[in-house]
Length: 251
Length: 195
Image: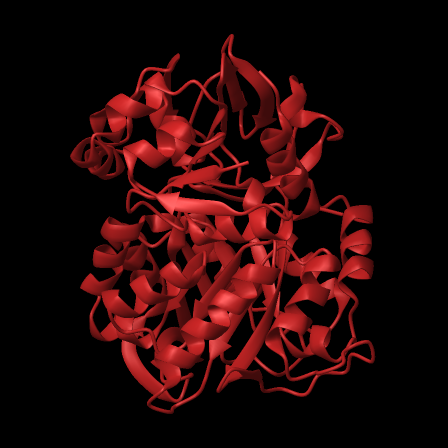
């Protein structure tokens, strides 16, 4: 049986992990490769690396990092952050990334999704959508959730699926950072209306939140950052707990 | 031991090279027929869309070379699908090594299937030392139905073939290079296989 996936997300700036991590066994907590290895050994199902650097050399630095990660990691990983052209995607895939995550650029230029899907296959196209509720309606936001648009979350999700996205990574800005649980109602609606996998993001605080997003939110995968980095939740403990609740999970 | 990874422009071939490196094997990424012919092992990867991948094979003449190879050959993911008679995706005629058609999942479940699923009914030395119900990483919308050449099955709404074997040809739908230590063991088994 296909299992639900647990995905730690690492923020990267100039080739280093940004958010503080609380791993005593790490020699260098800022080294994305070393952190990734620990997650892979602890049964993370996939990894996401989000590049937030803004320097001009970012493309080259990121490609070098991706190659280092691919050398050492034996599970799939996605790279995102500032990807805006087919050339960006080509470089990252060539360096060893399995998937890329496209966010704002897809909104500005939806054809980018179909171009990438046509050239490299839908399996490598994750479209990241940041949204929050405005007057009860879920609206897509850009630039890390700072810039609101008039675009409806569910219409946009349907459109990116039709354009060839292989998965959707939905981050609820209302839930992100709250540690109060995922946006399960919106997630369940996405899962019901679409046929591609949905990754839940934003709001993970405890084990119950993961259980809820897989059952109530019908999510195919759940992504989180700080609860894993600060060891508030151990991935193996989380997975054992989820399995005991009858959720299909890889242990 | 020379291991050739066929590089015809389809997909993430670096991951396979790196996985072999972790196992202590050197490999060559190549589309050169002369190099492929004399390699001890050949890996035929592939991700993306079937008809365009097939076109890339035809452009390089590899479509006639691959079925004639005599050494152990391992098709991975789309590579395995292209080794079959026919792929429903893009209405694509395959290499005809495995006498079976690759068809689309028609299920209430999400398509593509993305993630880790278990494999069972494991046969041949490819799965030497691999436990039944091991987890492997898969990404696919099309599948090979149960078949006489099947050496492993999985279940996604229905039972289907997740690995094939005939003579010197092996194919796996999952990504051994992305399936943790178990996947690496399967790659190692392939390298050490004797035919």
